[in-house]
Amino acid sequence: MSVPLTVLILFAAALLEAGGDALVRHGLHGAGARRLLFFFAGACVLFSYGYVVNSPPWNFGDLLGVYVVLFFLAAQLMAYFFFGDAPSKTTLLGGVFIVIGGLIISAGHLD
Image (tube, rainbow, N blue to C red):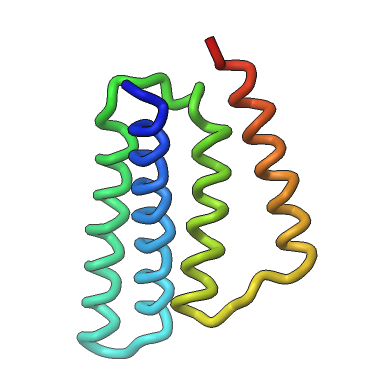
């Protein structure tokens, strides 16, 4: 599988995981049938994440560094656009270290 396709699949999985978490979060703060709808939607999206990330024939452990970076980015985008939560300076600083760590892990798997 090509590197761009792998990154695209991992980013789609990260969006699904962060999106499913966001739906569950909305469910926790909802009421009645709307609450259950958010929980159900969150469960479906999180299942989709699990399917997408595990379907390709790859050793997921080898891609974990890249996935953690993509998940961090997806979570920050969702927090900003859906919850209005801008990342703090410390979150951005930690994110820099996450990206650097992902690059270091990934560099060990370049052939």
